[in-house]
Length: 462
Image (cartoon, rainbow, N blue to C red):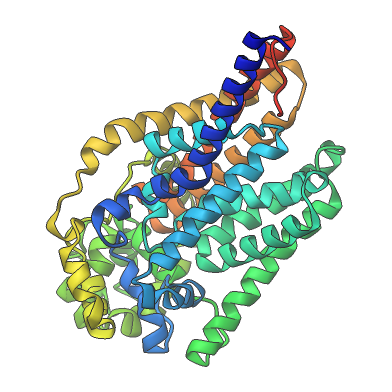
């Protein structure tokens, strides 16, 4: 080999070595950059409810005891153990997904990681004490279990199973999305033979069952109650309230049905969040969840059958609105008194670090962040549809198209579950839409490398 050829080989090896170092060491730090800059894990309004589960020993609406137990394990480190785990497992899942697409060069992992850090909500949700990081990651791990069984090792399958199971137990919406994906897979199995297998779908479906059992087990361990996490009917009530359905029901039925809310039907707040979490005197006066849960469930059930067309229109609008609500940072600001109160009550040794964090001084400007994140998220969803449209036009379902369809189904399912039940929120969209950007990056890399390979310039793998 002549000197110039040796120099080119050494230069290529040097570039690969640099890319590998960036991928292995720099990417986890970049994924935690918001928390490192903040000086403390990012908090959200809902964080306090999860932190309190270990200490309070009873169930509260929409707060998984499984995730609360997970947070408690990292409490002694001021939760940096939790964030470290979230960063490492994110990197592992990104790398494994790229690998099954035969994208094995460290350069591509580094490039994809940097792109996601720069243009999506991924580093913000990785840096946060909230279940959101597991929503998108579990979609990818379920895909790997269901569609890529022949490209992962036995150990990787076990780890993927355990992670997906845990993720399913962290939030009711997450288990709902994973259940919907499995159901869609079973329905499409006759048409996707060779792409999906019954064995893969059985393994994926088992994670949903195991996750549900894990949640029931932690609920029993911490509260002594064998029950699902409460709150579904209350959250649905809030969505119907802001759509005007609750007011309509009270106007039509208060003359014949005795309800606690009837005297207040003309004073209802404009949104479900204002009613449930806004500290209004009406909800407090009527006993909050303890005093109103049964009535909210009753009204919600009756309103579904009483106004089906009104419900259908509201559901369709809520789904669409949730699809385009993708801004980063909702609920992560300086005004989160409940979370502050929980930390002060149960973890007083962490109060100085928490109070010194930039978030608590309102130093985070998500408006600037979303000048990038929102257009990228919306464009990624459009490009996802373009990938599927191309596959349909060519009647050729390749690996990228299958992943695109899987992720598109997850995004639609997430929008339906969160939009219809809870009402549209940017947080629910931002926590999962970054995987659409990830799919677009995979498609772009495959196209670029396939073109170069066609020209005989280089192989995809080392």
